[in-house]
Image (cartoon, rainbow, N blue to C red; front, side):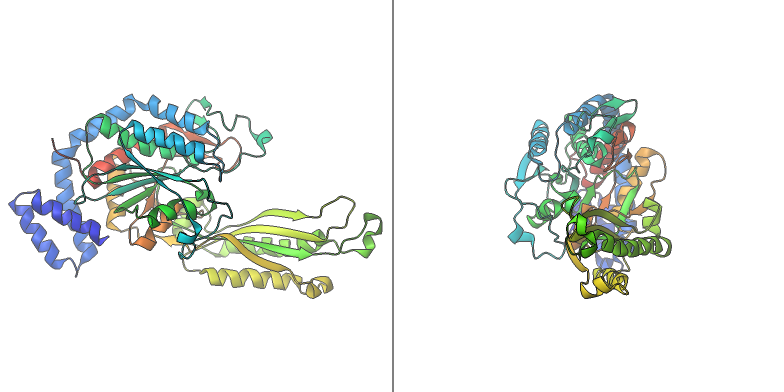
Length: 477
């Protein structure tokens, strides 16, 4: 944050008149005492004046370009949706993004994740997928070091469309019906990826050069925690003064998300032939005691645990999803094992240690009074995605700067909210950088007939183009 602020000082002192030079010297003197109060004032004074004098006409030109060429953006999304990129198999999509970045003259870098480089990071969680042969693609506009820098981030991986028989549209077709573009990953989040690209493309096609560095990150495995994707990119040194993950958050400005943990419960039974089932112990039947206890806990937490930003953004503050239940291996055998896999979300005032204790106690209590389960207690295993909650200060100068730009472009108030689902913006807190989430409207994420609303993608691209101008500045002719 401080580095970003100092870039404003440098730009103001060397690129403005006498009055603002004096203001800059005064602001530096009081910076350490009244950091945030000062910066709010300084940003508004310096940038508002600069924006009105330099970039009003420029922004209008860019907005018009995006509107007139929106079919190109839509076609790019269609082609992206037609590339299957289920998590773990993102390379074809990576090559598509490389091509799009090279088309607009960006330098392209690859980040190949390595477990040994990230496994000790406090934000690390394993996806249980190999990294070999997989890569993140970053398009780089170099810019100048004395201007604020920006990352527009999106993930290439998507969840499986199965069972495809539940779809009425081809999940890999990219079919357009009215304002809806259908397909797996259309909203989550290939539309966001292409909006990032098109926002910068619009500037460069018009000969408008951002003064600060702009990174377009196309990353892997966000759907499984992001360690091999965004975290690996940040660890490789690709950090900037501002960061936006363009998840489909319905043109809301998201600054917080729930903590997330995955766990599985294993219950043992006693196998026997179905014709002698009375001699066995059915693990599935025993598992339902645990299942019911966890379901009751989920309902209780939904009613009693409240966090305003999550409730505003998702309609409910916390969720616990009982996601998979597997048991037995043959219809004629009494099942000897049952395994339940779950995801639990939690608010910033709760910790991972507290959540672990809560779940393990609930499972233990469910086993009480059952002779078999008391002698063969259920086992709880924590695996996969694990992250503390993320809660970026809504009054952070970067958040407020983006909010102002977005409202100017959209002509309406932009709501600040949180989400009960995780995203990669949380990683920025480990690097002392501000981050947020903003993106188009999408329905049926992770479900059949997922679609993104095309007009909201166009609006997203317009907001990002204006934000690049406001945040990074532009080279004067």
